[in-house]
Image 1 (cartoon, rainbow, N blue to C red):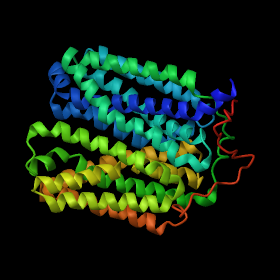
Image 2 (image 1 turned 180 degrees about the vertical axis):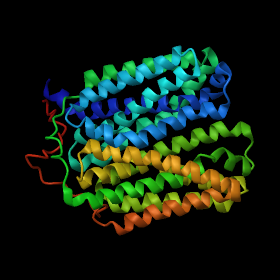
Image 3 (image 1 turned 135 degrees about the horizontal axis):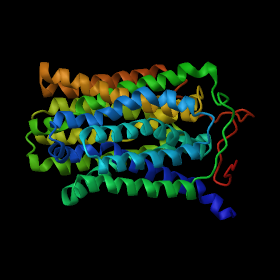
Image 4 (image 1 turned 45 degrees about the vertical axis):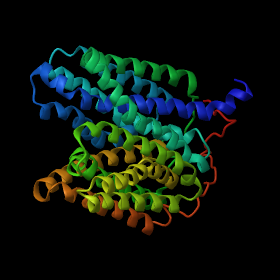
Amino acid sequence: MGRGDRQQTPTVGLATLAFCAFAGVSTEMAPVGLLPAIATAFTTSETQTGLLVSLYAVLVALLAVPITHATRRLPVKHLLFAGAASYGLSSLVCAIAPNFATLAAGRTIGGVTHALFFSCCIGYAARLVPPDRTGRALALASAGGSAGFLLGVPMVTAVGDAAGWRWAFAVLVGLMAVAGVGIVLFLPDLRRGPAGADGVQGRRREAGAAIGANTVTFAGHYVAYTYVTLLLLRSGLPSAGLAPILFGFGALGLLGIWRAAPQLDRRPRASALTILIALTVGLAGVGAGLPALVPVLIAAAVWGTAFGPVGSLFQSAAIRARAFSPELSGAWINATSNVGIAAGAGIGGVALDHWGVSALPWIGAALSLVGAVIVLMARRAFPPTAVRPTPSADHPPAPGPNDDRPT
């Protein structure tokens, strides 16, 4: 490989990881748009069919850390390729499933895969670049996941509407085949230290702050976002406007990632507080604006933009703490994000039954504010400026633009 190729490796590699995240999120959320067709095909209720999505969150929350720990001695590139193949198998089983039980089994394969795949994506993105570019690298990789919500799910839904839900899963098989080829061609083999060598025992408290703040922030977001259609309808938005507004919400999340990415490395603390305070203000603004449509849409725009970079924010903070390897740090963030999703949906459901939809954004704002307080108190986990760790034999520096670090 020539010098010019080596210089492109981090960007091309991160773009490959972004596509992997896009395909993974599209696979995870596919049943959302296909739910009515699947329910009709197998004569199941839509509530029962909806468990195909929540099954993912439960599996990821339970398995991300133990699976990542169990595979810590294996090459990360090999794990990513195996994950793409496993995702493809999951969608293939779903595409040909003769009954609902087989379909659920296919989704189970996908959920187990997701538990490891995204943990490896996070760790791999961090290893592709020097430590002082971790935030930007993770922002680029996570943008693929946001694009999965924004473009992948509507694409899969459109295929399902036009050709049937089985063909939609067949398209997902093709997406993962492309991802697998990209992993083979464009991701270098990165060496990592011996198992356990990447962690610094004394910094577990800093990692814990990032992981804890991630959990409550995701819970706060999903308390309201799980029921965002109810919030929008309550504000007077006609049902025909839901799709474009939700599309715009996702697009603003991508804008937020793009705007925040450079600052995640330069000023971690200020970036974290700005993002979480903006998220709190946006959610509270939705609550205060109800039931007037225009104030709700303005506040929702702030909310959507602020939430976009949240994942990258806490991923980079957990990795910089160096309490665990980048992959295991990613696993903790992966797991607790899904704990937050499940908890947020559950809290929101209870609040909806007891106090109505107008209470949801206020509860979300309160939880987001708790995340900001954790950041404010955890000064070492979110320093004013990013500190580049001193390289060591056990924790070599991540490769720069001119270093492929082949094994």
